[in-house]
Image 1 (cartoon, rainbow, N blue to C red):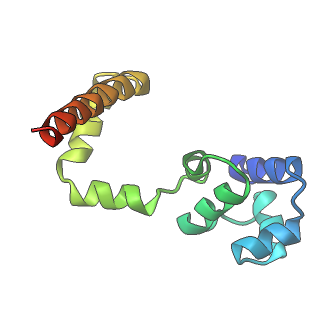
Image 2: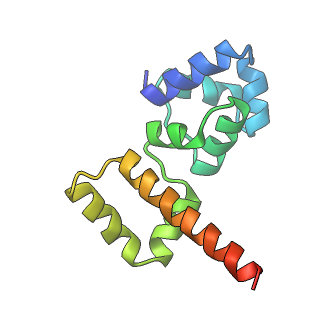
Length: 122
């Protein structure tokens, strides 16, 4: 059983969602869900994984990572911002943690919010 399939099955059962009901909400067959949960079929495309996350009340990034898939919005960001992959490589090469990046981002957002408040009151 794949980690993705195992996670889906455990979370679905935890929430009391039937296999067939889950499949219907996603727009796939119950047989597919059964096989996928047992690791006998691959994870669906990212849009369906995001829908699964919504139904299972789970962070879609967790499911996408378990399925080794990428959110189409993230792919668009990477493709449309040529400096973004280099930024991520540098952060990785320098062993910058997610926590450190989140703190830095929070400071930038706070600074921009302050700037927006000043601009709005002039």
